[in-house]
Amino acid sequence: MQIQRILQTVDTQNVVIQVPASFVNCQVEILVITLDESVPNPLQRRRVPPQRLAGRVKEKGDVITSVPAEDWGIH
Image (cartoon, rainbow, N blue to C red; front, top):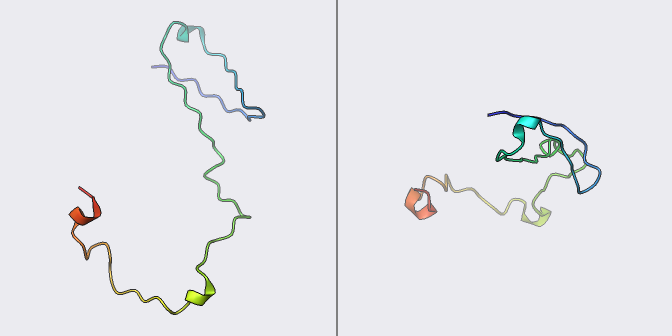
């Protein structure tokens, strides 16, 4: 297996890449992954519940382990 990694800034919806001659007449897999998506957006506000619900909800325990795994659809 040969791998060619290209980092490129995309400015249109079309991306053209050149591959090595050894790739010609071979089946290849092409993955396009954004690199900047994992960086949190500092302008994005953290979601918070409405103020009118404050103090009205009480946690009664562990809801995950209180029910058998089969009921959650986890097998």
